[in-house]
Length: 267
Image 1: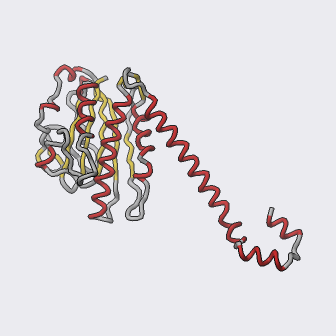
Image 2: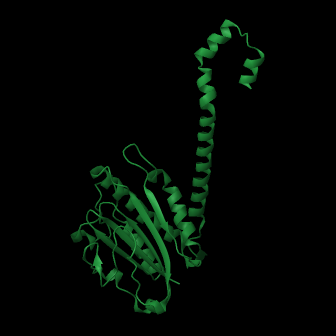
Image 3: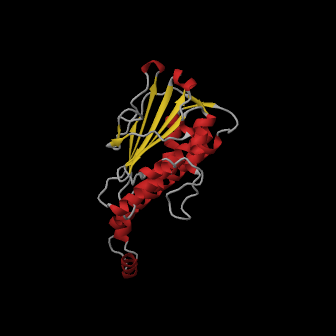
C-alpha cells in the first residue's frame, strides 16, 4: 500500500520526506513481515503450551486411563521447550525420538507425567552442566519406546543410545553392569509373565559417579547445589512406577558419558 502511494504521489513534500527518514520507513517495510511472522510464531507456540498444560493437568488422578504414551512424552517436551531450545551459551538440545508401535497403556496419566517431567528435567540440567565444561558438546536426549513380549525373555534394553547400557549380563558404558542393589528395584516375579512397555530416556550429560548411583532413588538425595533441587523427584518417580503401576525404574550411568533411565510398565 505504501509503495502504491509513493508511486502515485512521487512529489512528496519535504516534511513527509523528513518524516520518512526519521521513522526509517524503508527498514520498517523490509522488517515488518519478519516481525509479524515472529509474532505469529510466538502466538502459535503460546497456544501449544497452553494446550499442553491443559492436557497435562486434565487427567483425573484418581482413575486409571488408557493413554497414548507418546502423546504424554510430547506434552512434557513441549512444556520444556524453552529449556531445550538454543541458549546464548549453547545450541539447542537435540531430541532423538525412536518410538516403537505402542498400544494404549492403562495408567495414572498425571503421575506418569510427573515421572517423564522429572527424568527429562534432570537430563536437561545434566546437559547444561556438561556444556559449561565442554562447549563443543552436541547435547542430546534420546527417547525410545518398545513393547517386549513375555515369550521374548529378558530384553537387551540397553542396545541403543550414546550411553549403551544393558540391564544385566553385559557391560555398562564400558564397565561391569551393576543393577542398583536396592530393595526398591527388586523385580516382581509376578510381572515377568506379562508383556511390558519399555520407555528409555538417555542423555549424554555429566553422568553420575558410581558411588552415588546406588542412592539416586533415595528420598532427599540430590547431586544438585543447595537450592537447586529437593532430592524428591526421582524418589517419587520410583514410587509412582513401582508401587502405583507395578513396573520397574532403572538407572544406568557412567560419569562423564551420560545417564540412562529405563521405565518398564506392564501391559
